[in-house]
Image (cartoon, rainbow, N blue to C red; front, side, top):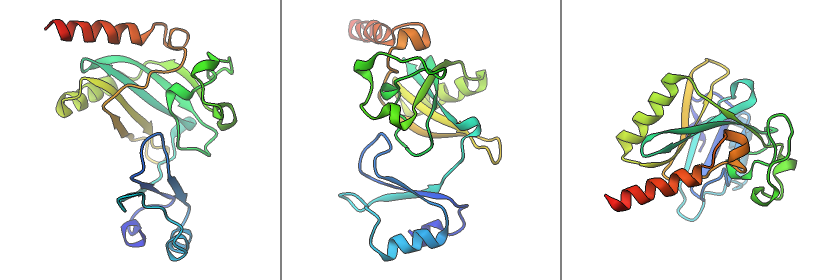
Length: 194
């Protein structure tokens, strides 16, 4: 871990191969903290002893964007804010809009309000939509989502999470203006007919 972090800007995060939704990600603010965790045997590498060490990029304005794709085409996007103490920004767990309005309770994770997760519908710049569609075409993925942020240090767009499945936002009709599940069913029916 220490060797893998050489040359990276701190803080860094260690992401063990333990599943999605930000599970097991730990942030280390400096090389000494990382070295101390390694020396103490405090880093969980998961069942296959595989982990990723990467720079922690501070998100401009404190939010990330998730873009959902259906049939390799842009479907919708949302901006997600977190209090910053969690890497689990699952949009299906979002319990309130950016303005604080509560969303449908049944779709919300029990601890989402405590984690400060807020969400709003958003339309990314056209170049981001084109990038996301190119990513899905190149990967041969028909349905899924891409998360990105704008690195507050450089202003660079960083696409950091590509998912070959969709995890639609809670209470989508209120957040993005339509029900993506209806469009997903229509898409699947059309694919089955083909």
